[in-house]
Each structure stands twice: as C-alpha cells, then as structure tokens.
Image (cartoon, rainbow, N blue to C red; front, top):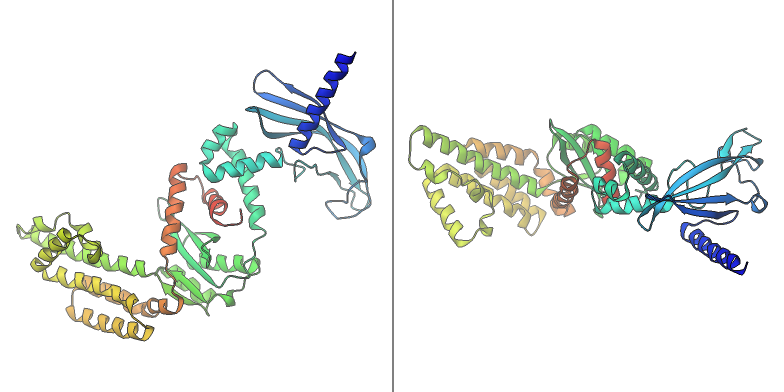
Length: 421
C-alpha cells in the first residue's frame, strides 16, 4: 500500500512538473502521460469543473452576460518531448452569450487562439527555426508539411506587422528585385533605420501608391516624408511625384555609376565589332576586357592600370568615354552642392562635345536626373543600403532554392528583416 502511495506521489510530482513546463494551470490538470511505442507522447488533461472561474466575456460582442454551455474535445501539438512528438488532449468548455447568442470556445493558457492546433510554445519554435534555416529544413526537423509551417509563419507575421507604427518615418529607401523569370519583381521599402516596412508587388508607380496607403494605415503621414533614395526607374519616380510631392528624390550614385560603366562597355563592344569586321588584329586586345574597364581605376593594381592605359592609347573613343566615366565620380566628392552642380553641368557640356553616341546616351540620362543626383548633398543617403539588403535576400532565397509565390517571399522578408518579428 505504501509503495502504491509512493508511486502515486512520484506521478503527481511528474505531472506537476509537466504542467509547469507546458503552462497548464487550474482548472486543468494532467491525468495521464503515455508513450505509444512509436513516436508520440500523449498527454491527457482533465477540466475540473468545481474549480472553474466565472464564464469569461463573449469574444464576439464583449458582453458579460455569458454562461457555460458544453465541452468539446480538442488536441494540440506541443514541442517535442525526448525527441518524440508531444500531443495534448483535453475537453474545452464552450460558453454561450445571452446577448448575441453565439457559442464560443474559451481560451486556454497554452494557446492564444482557441482554434489553433498547436501550442504557443510549438509555434514559436517554428518561427525561431524558420529565421535560421530554410522552411524545408524546418519541416524535416519538426516532421511537418510545408503548408503547416507557412500557415504558422503567415499568422505570426501578420500579427507582428499589425502592430507596426510608422509615425516616425521621414525617409525611405526602395529597390526592386526579380523573383521569377519574365520580369516579375517585388519592391522592398526600408525606413531610415534600414528595417523593412513594406514589401510590394512589381516596381511600378502603383507599388509606391500601395506603400503610401500602407504608411497611412499605420499612423504614418506622406507629408512627413522628406527624402527618398531610389534608382532612376520611371515607376518609382512617377509614384514618388504622385504620392510624396514634398519629398526630395535622391538617385542612387551607384546606379548612375552603373550606367556610366555600361556606356564604356557599349563603346568597347562597338569598337571590337568594327575591328572584327575590318579583320584588324587589335581586336584581340579588346576581347575579354569588360571587367577591366568597368572597375574603378583607383582600385586596380599597378599591372592592370598599365594595361588600361595601353589599351586607351589604342582606342580614342573608348579612351574618352572611360575618362568621362571616371571623372563622373567626382560629383559626389565636392565640398558643397554648389560646387557639385557647377562641376556636373560642366561635365555634361564637355561630354556632349565628344559626339560619341554611347556617351551621349549617358549624358541625356544624367542631365534629365541632375536634380536628384545633386540632392545627395541634402540627404546624404544612398541605395548602397539596398544593395546590402538585396544580398541578404538573395542569400536566404538561395538557401531555400526559391519561393513558390510572392506572398511566401514577402512573409520571409518581414520575418527576417522587419525588426518587428
């Protein structure tokens, strides 16, 4: 008899330990815990009616006029126990509202939502793992299907983002990223703290309009936005003009430099084609030298600098375009905006005089966006922030081997980069 009592005491202590770990409190208590011999531990709960509190308020209408109605059976998956799947089973009371007549389940301490199939602890484990590894790996680790994992992540991210307050936002960065073949893009909007605040579909003016709506729906104000960092995409420019008329647009200096290197490379390809057509042996000198010309001259070692100088002596058009490409960098190195403006317009006039078609294309682009280029002296912001952010996106996209939809990609971006999740 004493042995039976001692075993019962030990079991009671064990059940009390499990209750503390899982978060079970009165009027619920554990009455059994069994291993099925395969891969699952089943924990059964009892609802002690004599210890139940007053019926809670109606979750539908908020009325306090409620009464207990009946009991329904429910199961939840909890975090693994000794590497075995842990399932919790119990009867959950339902209440009926005398006001609206609705019948609702009461909330339980271990799960915030009465309809959930998983405990809060389990769902948070899914979230933590998903921040560190691809969803496919999370599925293998937790023995789940990917739809279940994405459902948990979507619900968690939606809950976190619903608390977003953008009243502080006065600067945003935006850039596009191709997510599928066929020119399918998403646009990421970052705040002045470099956290993602919005992910929109496509890269058009409508995307910027969607961002403004999102901003205003979360206590932000379009009139408070003073600076915008972007590339020279027409959609972003039009969207900013329509939705943020008071903001100054700063065009990304690295994007301008990219267009300048394209002008150099286009000139190299044209001269190479002409040499091939004329069967000129100098064509061999230009072949395969693309990366030599697009790099910053100052960043080349002595050997490559010598190689560049020798090639430029042989090809006058390429030489002039290259010199203008390198000298354009000085726009961002002046002591004042006034000096930069004078330098830029002098650069434009001198470049026009060359008559080189590839350079003229660059000049037209720079001249039409000169104000936004010079706004850098007011904002001191650059889309170099976005380049770093996009490399992070590419890293976790690559580890996941892509995402099936824009929605899933957006969920993962918010989860890892919003600062709210």
